[in-house]
Image (tube, rainbow, N blue to C red):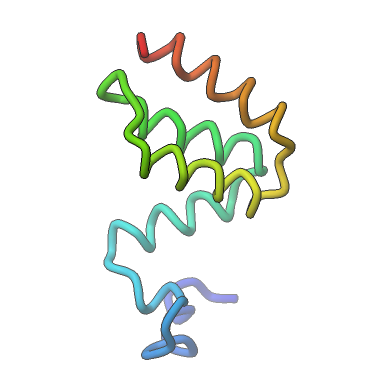
Length: 88
């Protein structure tokens, strides 16, 4: 699919790239291009940039891990590494 025209077919449909703002759409495309573990690691790294994880952020990461098909053990291991990396 030609990405310059990808949004045209989805325009106006909720839950699609066209319904997202530019930053969210970019992140969605970036995550789609990665494998599941890498995508989760990027998301966890972003959440932990401030050195902590809020309750809502934790719920979002758990849902993302499930949506990506990651086991709880894999998601926990990735989070442990990201916590060390970010001093959380």
